[in-house]
Amino acid sequence: MTGPAAHVERDDPRYRKLARDFRAACESSGTPCWLCGQPIDYRLRHKPGKPIPDGAFEADHAKAWADYPHLRLDRANLRASHKGCNRRRGKRPADDLQRELALGEPSRTW
Ligand SMILES: [Zn+2]
Image 1: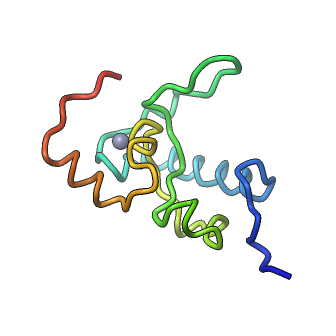
Image 2: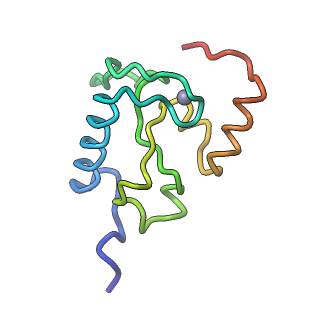
């Protein structure tokens, strides 16, 4: 048998609760995006049938979701991010993107 955190997917109720709690904590403290350093508009919500805005909050995984499955339920591995920054990072180490953003990419369009 594998450990309790194995095979955790994003629709796992344990993960959904963790992500919800994490978001609430970030929202109440106004935590900025850890990738670009800019504030997050926590009012941007996911609406059914609409694409999620790039500026919306997403829980990023400091150690990538895909590469560290045993950390998927580890709250200490979560970071507040913009959806757009999170997607841009993909599976790269976060400091790759942080460096890229610090080098002055064309300004964001959202
Ligand atoms: Zn960002």
